[in-house]
Length: 273
Image 1 (tube, rainbow, N blue to C red):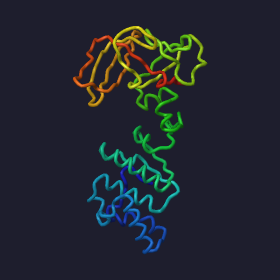
Image 2: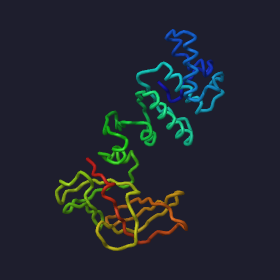
Image 3: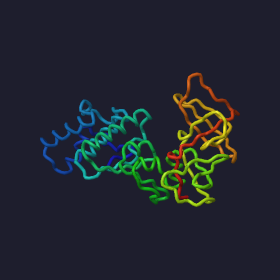
């Protein structure tokens, strides 16, 4: 197990921490030294073998804790928020390193995390839990693209979740309608559904009626670096979030500007509740 605070023994060096599980199993000195050297090289800590935890950075402590956990060749590796103490850049780098290590060792790993990106990077299967209950168990892609409940959709960062009405094989949103999302052709006309879609599923254009277009007015615009975020009010009084690549000379769209929104039905999902 790798703990959130790493729980390294402060009076032991990196090599001694790594060897601890083998010593408890009475592994001989020669084999112990060989396996310590192998595992420290694997986590890129071989040059720091003689240092103590107080002399290590957060990322180095994390690697040392990981080495101690995998040196015994466990059947299952358990991780409790293992990157929570790291800054964003280091956390992302360590997530990728751990994924490579998982694949190299073919090691079953169970990880608890509140970081959605971490789950996307590390997992083959994701279980989203609420109040001790699993509310959806699926692949990372399915959890991201096809959440089944409002809770999962919100937890996975879907910006637009709203009630809509089925209208002749289409979904009516505001003063327009979009095609039926995948797998939901059997909904009866007039039924109310909850639909969810990400900000990047919307394309903004000049105002004008047309198939699949919803009219709106820009309420807010923000520069997010490579992308622009817009909040757009539609006829129902709801506010949708739209994300698009930021064009040179931003802002190219201003508050109170009337626009049309084209929502990709293939990127929408109808929620269970």
